[in-house]
Image (cartoon, rainbow, N blue to C red):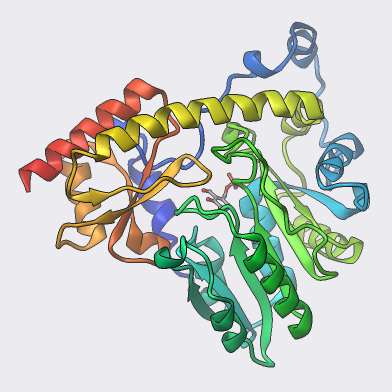
Length: 369
Ligand SMILES: Cc1ncc(COP(=O)(O)O)c(C=O)c1O
């Protein structure tokens, strides 16, 4: 099979550990286990026998996740996956076939985009528009639906813009997917990383064919656990679980164990509060910095540790990123890799000094042009 290279991930994989300043990350600087586990738990973890565990996730953990989405969800509505990346993969593999149409939000984290195209699924890109505060125009969504539309895929809060979908647009998207009787897939891995500290509305349960994928890598600052999940109907969860037998069997026993403990309401709120404080502090710094950098227009995102800055320099985004990387040893991501040219994404989730040093180098680079 021929598959498309996932440019965003490939560029990060190759260079994120090589540059002096990696501002290509979209999440918050990772937590250490000592920051999230009690002393007793830390002692306990050393003596844990490393079983496979439950292949669909331990009942404890699935209960914690189900609780996050409200009373109408039970453990049977939850599958634990290896990152939200696996959850997204399963959604495409279990529900779509070559020739099906997928309406896809851009700009985005284009995992589903490249994967689906590789399988012959027809990708219909629909931009969220900066002039609409990075919202969809519902008339455009309606106009894109045909009898072949099998799925509408959104990323909310959005990567790379950090925009949160408005209630009006959400209600419209739900109504349109209901009428089209198609899957509504919502990647919500940035939910919980809102700058105002209020978790945005989830699509979970919006229709019988809604699937929400999320995980601990971004808002919860724990990407190394590789912990993700899907929330959907029992039928969907069973089908995705059957495919998951072929992908990773189950997530690491250790990750499931840790997540089961920290995903109680109080403990997860503690982590999300740290996220909010850190992001607000760094974002203020970034906005102040941008005032003196005319080469970029930076606007305040509503969520996530990223800003999608407009390039006011006549240069393809990829060239800008490569030159910055090769000459100033700073890595950011190109608009092109998020399916929208003319922008670059800057991550500001790392420690403040580190972000500031990286930003100073970006300013030096722009001065040098
Ligand atoms: C929107 C979105 N979905 C999914 C992922 C994959 O994340 P993970 O597998 O670590 O949960 C990312 C990573 O950047 C992302 O931005």
